[in-house]
Length: 245
Image (cartoon, rainbow, N blue to C red; front, side):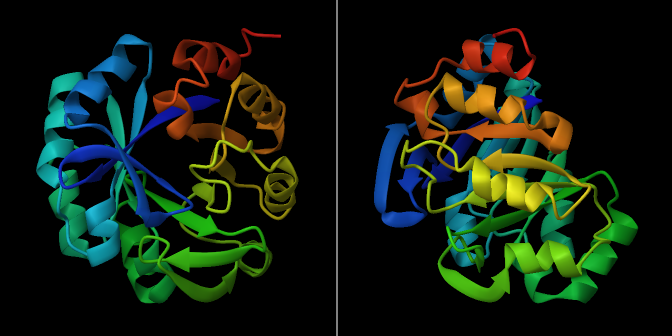
């Protein structure tokens, strides 16, 4: 299981939101590149970077910063936020990003997903953001899609990828703990692997999710818990590797 430290960017700064609410923004650093180096020094191998300006507007607003993070740290980077066209995929990948995160575009356009699957195998990952009822959201969590995550996986078996990011936005940024019940429900519907986000608070959450690795949890994204220091990234990485009881 892999730990993915999260770096969310608005106006070039490292921030965190609560439940995806842009009005509940908290700034943690004016220098996302320095934050990324901090996570590297602590043992991170991957970064989860989201351009929140891009997620809301559909335009790549902070890609240059992400490119600098990749070049400076040498870490593997998955990057999303506003990537809704083949052109934007190519632009991101040309910045040496390891894989792009796709959400809104593939939910709105099945033909787009087909093109991506054909031409970008191994270079993309699908991200699904849902609330406590399972309702899936798009456009930076600003609008509902009419889709339900449980029905989505029950009805769809072939996506062109075998790994997904699933974010419980009802818990995201709340430091209220992960909802393992809803995660287990999703795991039972698919043989895919899942990177889990939303609500991680302390080391007990990582230990609980580690127990679900055999059922499909391949990674955990940690955001506010790192910035508020309710969890130590070194402990999280150790727990993800099974080195903590």
